[in-house]
Image (cartoon, rainbow, N blue to C red):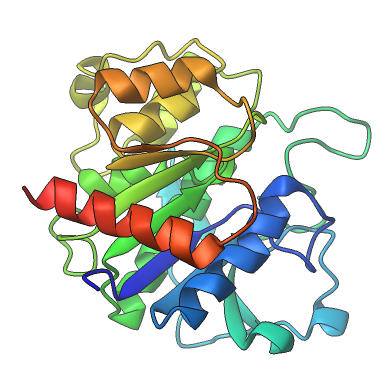
Length: 274
């Protein structure tokens, strides 16, 4: 077994949010991988609907306290943690008053998309990566789920590529149908800027920043493997991954999680090493 440590950057986990294909995967896949003998770390956003008292969240002071600058604005990073006792699994939560406090996921209580969803995704990705650096934990595979995690592969392979936790990590992205539909190209590119990720770099990528699918495309462009996380999801993205000769796991269902995903992680790890 070459893959011994797996980092999960998830968007949703039951019981902290309602059941969905993504939240069930966020809950059961890390447990299955942990029970297969691998070490895991799991992250998700601290969405506004999460009851901190009922779910026993508490702040981790030693990990909190830094600011993440997006578009020249400082945003304090708060790290909280809770445990799913039945799974013996600890979950880290990325929190911030501007992006998550009293706010839901993709849309608000009126069904309207939040105009700063891309900023929220950028803050989440960088918040996770900065926290993993503080933990001094070096994963073999980093598995990202959904649009909220979609910029993490880009940062892992560029701005953070020389940081020890990420220098040798392989990235797997699970694609779902849900995606923000409205993006401002100028705002998106400006907010993405960080370290070596600048205008010249972003302009050089073969990506249409005006496309509603741009987050998925960016994720695949910087990943080492792709999972079709829902049956029939994102067929164009599957073709895009195939054209890049990426290992692809077509919709595997919800059975034999440890075996199916464990084998895929090993395949990605081995193929990229060649």
